[in-house]
Length: 237
Image 1: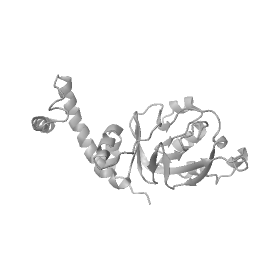
Image 2: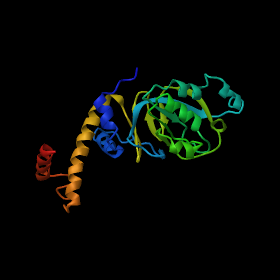
Image 3: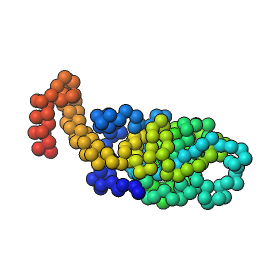
Image 4: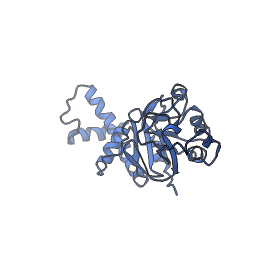
């Protein structure tokens, strides 16, 4: 069962950069949580955040992957779209294959209407122009017109996958911003979000110092004097 995020964790993660999150996770020994080759399509008002619902593809086979399979409501791609929970992010493992699309405007619209928090694929999307204008966060490897059946056979929902070179387990917390997408183990999300929020609050202060002409030495990273100045600043803010 997916672990529910605390409201304060969700709020923090909507505004913390993926850059800060990767640093917080690096301190815990995690070096591979940022998806490679996966980027934002369109724009964001706030970070995409939600637990992962996963969909895994294997290479297509001609006798199985024909246009008629989409008439079956149990087809894993269609079922993933229809069953992903509100507030979740659908994450598709396309093995990094960018020769075809892994979805299009109609599927993204259905996810949006159903209340999904977003969609991530290390494959491509067709209808990329209209999708980029939607108020629905999508992250992909780029645009591609050919349909997914040419290269992809959907096999499993909510199993462990790889996406953008990162292991994703169902219920992992997915966070996406303008830099890309990170994956947080659900059990670490609360503590990492709290630490990262505190780090970004301090860095807002450090930035004011740098903008005022301070050198990096003693400022970034902060020495004891800078930390004391930060505590005084924080008390007033």
